Image 1 (cartoon, one colour):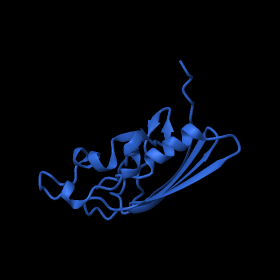
Image 2 (tube, rainbow, N blue to C red):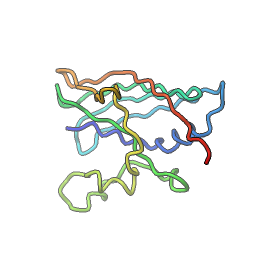
Image 3 (tube, rainbow, N blue to C red):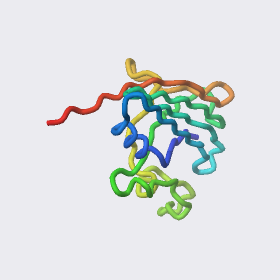
Image 4 (cartoon, one colour):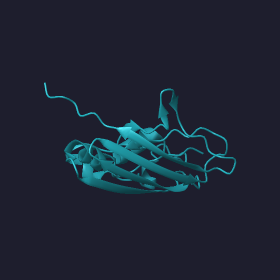
Amino acid sequence: MRLAVCVAFGAALLVGIGQARAGTIYSYQANLVAENHSGVSGLALFTLNGNFLTMRLQASGLTPNQIHMDHLHGLLGAAAPATSLPPPSADTNHDGYIESVEAVPFSGPPLFATPVSVSPLTYPVASGTGVVSYTQDLRYHRPRPL
């Protein structure tokens, strides 16, 4: 089982980052739901304060003692409001699972990864009971105009 964090607000979060004003704090919440009958559930909380993004992730039902690479998906631009979890009909090869390539038209591509450490690159490992719980602080650097 994989932790597939497919959150419909990924694009909204990026828009918020791009438009964040000093002194304004934005909060987002994502309820993590099972994909492909995995039994995974959880909660992701995001707080954007200026150029700092804090992510808190709590998930259970994961494969114990395994790495779970998490990331945010989303559609960008005018399509952003249509970002959603893929419906069962997205299983176009009818194998009973929605693979990433089948989900992209609904959830969008991965926008950015959320490792627990970037130096060295480290993703969370589920506990022996299949739980991941961590907080990650990220700093967003706005691109400079050309």
